[in-house]
Amino acid sequence: MQRVLTAVQMREAEAAAQERHGMPSGLLMENAGRALAEAARSVAAPGARFTVLCGPGNNGGDGLVAARFLLEGGARVVVSLVGDTAKTTPEAKRNLTALEGFGESPRAFEVLPEPGPGDVVVDALFGTGLRRAPEGAFADAIGTMARWRRAGAKVVAADVPSGLQSDTAEPFTPCVEADVTVAFGFLKPAHELEPGASLCGDVRRVDIALGGEASRVVSGPELFRVEEKDAREALPVRRADSHKGTYGHVLVVAGSPGKTGAAAMVALAALRSGAGLVTVATRAEALPAVMAHAPEIMGLALPGDGPLGKGDLEALKAALEGKDALVMGPGIPRGPETGALIGDLLAAVDVPAVLDADALNAVAEDLSVLRRAKGPVVLTPHPGEMARLTGKPTKEVQLHRVGMARQLAAALHVTVVLKGSRTLIAEAGGRVFINPTGNPGMATGGTGDVLSGVCGALLAQALPLPQAAWTAVYAHGLAGDLAAERRGLMGLIATDLLKGLGSVWVRWGR
Image (cartoon, rainbow, N blue to C red; front, side, top):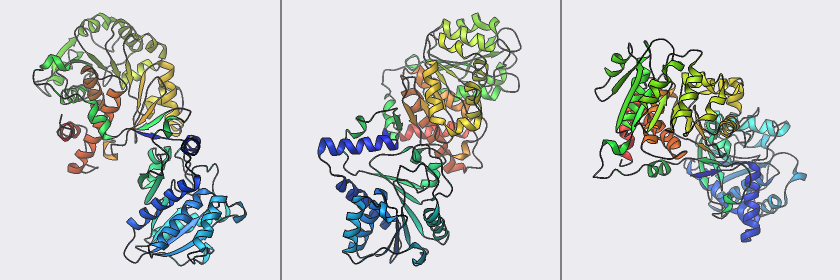
């Protein structure tokens, strides 16, 4: 896992490094500037010119250090100080003096030579503390950088692109769009959440000698980025003496006439994710079409017809006997009693449950039914479903994804998987995990059904929460990435992820 820190937490980490280890702030800046210079060199063409735009704060100081290291390496460098130089911080002033010792004096950015293809522009105007839209000379400088980038220059940002809010990942107007962003010490929310992540380009986290325990001494909510190693190692290696009963039995309550594919995709994803057995429970008229998708799917016809309601409770309780996980929701026929049915079912059994699609819409009418659950519950809403669960507009959900997911998980004592670009996994205890895998090609019907099946299979194999959830999300996204390499983004469909899952397990030696 990589810890993701807010601006306040980053300041606490830096203070801890200085107090506990005697790490002077000047050395942290020196390390940051060196890393920034290395990143700039890595994207430069032979003989490139380097233009460094610095603000008056410590972010500008990082840029001044980078300029000095570039000059030491024999590069052609020009530097500009933007804003009120009277506000230049002591560390930045010290590095300005050091830079001038190399014969380079800052110039007004309006008279700088125009960078072109192969050249590099270093954006060191603002750091993580920006709270309002850039104005005046800063806005002009950001606009100038955008023009230079359109002309072919590469832009390398120091910590966060200027104009991007570090904690919310929301851009002000104007905002730098970077090709590379060098994250100092720890990742920030702007690096991992959209729309900020897209504006950061290639994010490169560098160690600036804060100390290994720096992130453990900061206060406030915990946010993490899931790494492939985390997901791979969460999966047990299969023993030679195992059998189908070792890997759990998933009950899938899904599908209805016209929506049998949803049930089949959940079941197939569970089977492709290691579940020993999978049974689909659905209305009798839908069952033959579901089972026709694969001979490995077992079926159970639910009595009655029409929407699921309280009359189905006893049949579902019986169906869950001997099962290790429940996935419920995709394609179910929903009616006025469906939410109450789900609440009564979860209160009667202690198997872990994944609720998706119309199961979420059903419980959204009365969320109190979830508080009666005997076993762990995972909710997997997309933004529209999250809006119904929280009673907030979808736009607000998208603006406050981390907070919304964290609050809902804590309020209901469930695990929330808020789907979308950079899917979030929030546990009831307050920790939130960001998933980096997946692509826009997965914005197609059925991919959420596949995710539910993967999650159900891992829960059936006794992976605890939240590991089961973030492992499922990571593997699901990686399956989509591997499938997109073969199909492209436009041609990707949900069932391609089933083959992609196989590629993931091969890659992970599982």
